[in-house]
Length: 90
Image (cartoon, rainbow, N blue to C red):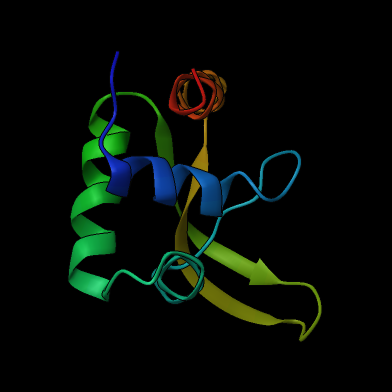
C-alpha cells in the first residue's frame, strides 16, 4: 500500500510514542505543519485504511485532566510508515 506525503507525515507524528498512545489534532498539527482541517482529513483516511485508530475520552496523566480525543498508530500503520520511509531513500 502506498501512502501520500501527508499520510507519511501524520503517521510519523503519531509514531513518536511507544504503545497505545493517542495524539490530538493540535499535537499532530504541530509536528507536521499541517492545519487542523488537513490533519482531520488525513487521520480519518488513515483510520479507514486500518493504519490509525481513533479513541475518545483520553486522559492527560501529566495534568490529571481530560484530554479529549485523538489518533494512534496501528501495527499496520507502523509497517506502512517504515516501508514508505525506506522507499524514499532507495
